[in-house]
Image 1 (tube, rainbow, N blue to C red):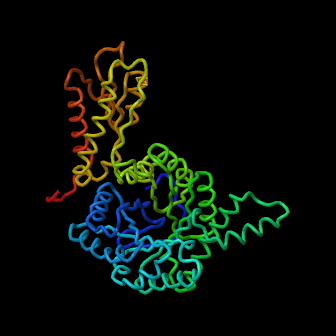
Image 2 (cartoon, rainbow, N blue to C red):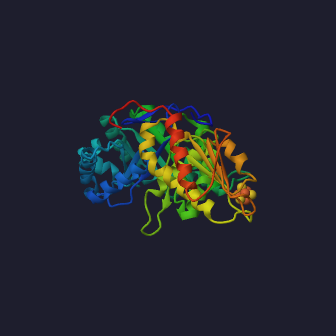
Length: 410
Ligand code: SF4
């Protein structure tokens, strides 16, 4: 159950994964392989799914990519991966979906950008894609992006704004036009015959304040589920923090039904980082729980060694490694909290807020580490086996607290 009440939205089924307020907020990701390279794309989809992605988008930008979609889908199914695949279309989507019907049916959702459906016959091309979606019973994400906003709409809005007695700032006109573009396209899709529960909207920008503004406006004017994300968030720490800063104010208002974190991977960096960041954002806001959380203090002059930092890391790694097993066997374990603290000043207090907590001795303290379980003093650990002893306490806690799933095969 989410800590923050969700805005009520329609439910859109993407195969077995539903997006909408009655369902958990869905994590999705996008590959950066050449879709025509089936082997590399299958491998990356598998990695993204293993990291926790529940929907994966692949670009379908040319005939080779369109031809490869069925192979990618088949290989994933052969390997037991039934993740919904979303096709990302720009400019030639109407042609590819028409010429490659097997691609059109293998995909579980189409993503189209109304600003990028071809400039001359924009409305006809848009109509063609929607008609194919209707005939295949495939939902559509109408994804507006401020980098590729429909220039006709924007020019008209700018002209109207220039004639106002008090013109708005141009960035506000862009935001308003993005909202109009998304809503008009959805309206048009419904007029063509696409059911309203087959539409997801997004309106992505790359700056946090504008993202909050555009999604608040969109949320106030429709009941379509919203795909949330800061586009082109950037590299590493900057991308992670910018995304967190941008989407969190919306998530706590209940806005957003599916999340994608658009990080630029570092050279040779893992694509899966975007999935881990998305999970951590949702878990930090107590929207969804994926794995037990380890709380640790920052350390200070009272910390006598790096033991507590090493221990916090070791405990976190230990939990992550074992969650593959615990997560399947002990439902509810993902809500467990563990505190690893550097001394007894704040340690016992913080430990009492966690399910399990340990406070390592500070530099002037007795070499003892009190352990708390569910707020009560459990034991005091000493000696070189202290970390292993604490791991044993964690394991015993899990086995005695969470009801084991009655499945012999687990
Ligand atoms: S718990 Fe102790 S070691 Fe950690 S920051 Fe606080 S005073 Fe410093």
